[in-house]
Length: 83
Image (cartoon, rainbow, N blue to C red; front, side, top):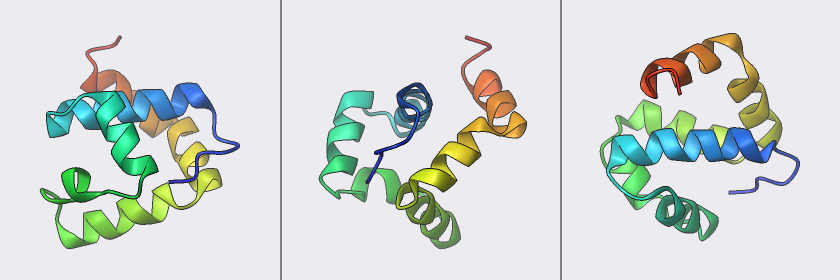
């Protein structure tokens, strides 16, 4: 996972949301993703979702664009209860 050039707040928000859905601590998820270990993140995803997930993680500009989109912000607020 290459997060250079990506807004750290967006990465942290994404990790927090995803880790909550996967049931693992955000820092553990970050560490696993930085090491290229995607097992916890991918094991419960449909193949098409897993492919898209990998595509976003491998492209910092795409990740930044996705997290900055109004739809992503609205989804994040919905998933976190507006926090």
